[in-house]
Length: 235
Length: 235
DNA sequence: TCTCATTTGTACGTATGTATA
DNA sequence: TTATACATACGTACAAATGAG
Image 1 (cartoon, each protein chain N blue to C red):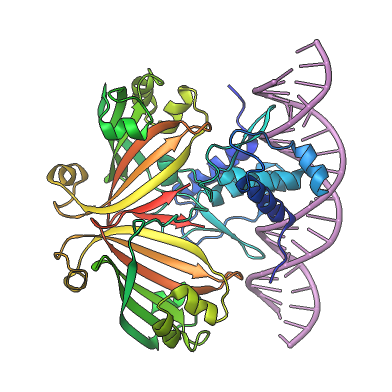
Image 2 (cartoon, each protein chain N blue to C red; image 1 turned 180 degrees about the vertical axis):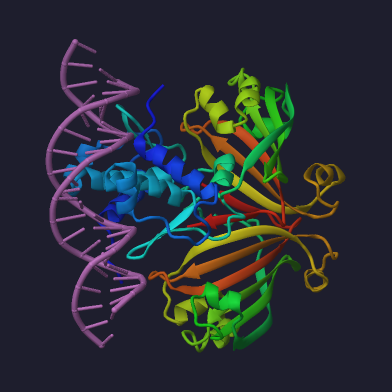
C-alpha cells in the first residue's frame, strides 16, 4: 500500500468540506496562500489539489479574483469536461465537421425545459456531421438560447467549434451537467447521412452543458455510429 | 489576445506529432529530460504539457518506465474521473437477478489481459440476467481471477451480489477503472434471453474494476436493452 | 536475488506575469 | 493606482517504480 500524496489528502479534505456545505455554490474558497498556511504546505502543493477539484468540475478559478465553488455541488461526485472535436483530435484522427443546418426557431417543450427557458423562447440550432478520416462517425444537434447568444450561428459557421463559439459569446468555460446514453437503430435518414445500413446500431447521447454559474448554455444530441466509435469513461 | 503559454504550445506540438503518426499506439515518448532539452524548457513545463495529454486520454505515464501513447485510437475518451450516478433502474423498481451460468475455466486472451493475469490462467465466470418488473433489462458477464477468489462462485450463488462476494473475498472496496460503451444489435441468443427481436439495439458496456492497490478484480460486460434502459451520467 | 541507473511522482523554493477588485 | 490572487516558469531535492545486468 502506497502512501497517499499530500495533495490528494488536501483535495479530499476540501471536497468533503464542499460536500458538507462548509462552502456553498458560488462561494470563494480561501486563497492559495491561506490554504498553504492552513495545511502547512507549499503553495504549489495546494495548487495541485485545487487543480484536481477544478478537473472534477467542483471549483473554478478566476485569475486575480479567487477560486469559486461551482454550482450544484450537492449532486456531487464529479463533473467532467467534454470537448468532442478536441478529443477526436487527441485520438490521432483527422476530425472534420460538415454543417447540415443552421437556424433560429421557437424551441419545443423539451428544448426550452433543458435550457431553462420560458415556453416558446427562441433557440438557435446547429445540426451537422462529424467525420474522422473522411468517414462519418456521428450526427449531432446543438441547441442554444438564441437571446443570450445572438451571433452564435455566424460564429459557428466561421469557427465550426461549439467551444470557440461559446467563448466568443462570453462563456470562457463550460461543464457537462448530465449525459444520457441509449442504444438505437439507425433511421433511413440517419443511415443515409452516416453512410450505414438502415437498422445498424447507433449510440445516442443527450447532454446538457452549463456555464460556471450553472446556467445551461447548450442542449446537445449526438448519434454515434455504433461500430466505429467506443465511448470510454475512465475514473 | 493573451500569449499562449509555453506548456500549451508543447502539448499542441506533441498532439500533432502523435496525430501525424510520428509516435504510434504503445510507443514510448521521449523522456521528460529529453523533451525539456528539445524544447529548451524546464522539466516541469514539459510535465504540465504531458499532464494535458494524459488528461485527454492520449498518453499514459508509468513511473520508472516512461510515457506511452495509449492504445486503440478508435476509442473515444469522454473524460476522466466520471462515475455513473447509476439511477439506471428507475426509482421504486425492484431489480432482480437470475443466474444463468457459474463456472471456472481457462481465461481467453482478452480476459487474462484485462485482469492482468498470465496467459491461460483460470477465471471464474458469472453470467446472468437483470430484471426489473419481471422484464429483462440486461445480460451480464462478470469474470474474476479464480486463484485469488477460490470461493467466489458459491459466494455469488448465495449473495447474488458482486460487491458482497468480493467483500467476502477480502476486497472491502473497489473502484471502476474504465468503462467502454458501444451500440450493438442483439444476436439471436441475446434476443432470446432478453425477450427482444433479433437485431434490436443493445447498449454494451465493458468495465474493469480494481481494488485499492489497483489490481483488477473484475472484468465485466453488460448488454442493456436499448429501448428499456438509459444510462445517466451526472456531474 | 540483488544492485543500480533511469524515469516518473511528489514537494518545496523563487520569481515574475496578468487579471481582478 | 495599488494591493491581491491566480498563472506561468524557472530551479532543487528526494521518493518510488521500473528494467537491465
